[in-house]
Length: 129
Image (spheres, helix red, strand yellow):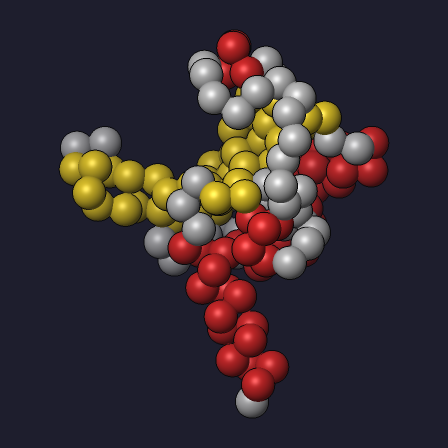
């Protein structure tokens, strides 16, 4: 029973972190505290690149976690016409980022963002290179 409760709590954390660094909240696997400039290790790059190619629309969140591992960030996706209404979330897998804030260009960031709906199903994959 404790294991089921623990898994349920971890599942809630994964889906509720808003712009947080997932590793800090989920106890490893993701990067956790990100030090800038950041570069993913070769092993992590390989896992992100190979795993993200295998992700497709309709896939369950747990399938994505099994293929790629914990994301570096989890962000809410809001309705563009009603910014108070959450319509999903995204997992962010960083390949590189020079600094924490700024535009994509200023941060010199490369990443994979996997979008999910509220039923935790993949709706799209975006590669930022």
